Length: 139
Ligand code: DQA
Image (tube, rainbow, N blue to C red; front, side, top):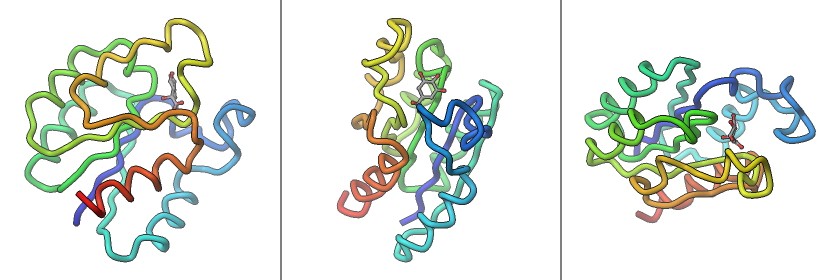
């Protein structure tokens, strides 16, 4: 199976950004570990800070992948466009958050994208990405 991990704004700073919340691994390092742990899956990684680029990548993924792990980061809480893009494609999307968004500021408690996703993993750290991959192995 081909799975793409799409990360939104500021996740390029992972490892440097608020390590007490998001951990100290960069995503590139972590992604290599994911590839080694999941030899049966063809994994790709994409990150953008730009909402429209995330929308375009989600649209493209419809033809190219069997599943999407999406951490839309701050756009989770604001983006009708990402909500609509997920609704427009047939490929299943699992929503990922490294932190537990319900333990944080109130503005993070609402996700605009969850209603279009298969499910959501939040608060389990980077392990959430591995757990999302497990879902796609069996579905
Ligand atoms: C996040 C949670 C969001 O509220 C935040 O804006 C992020 C990261 C997470 O992975 O915990 O940038 O999606």
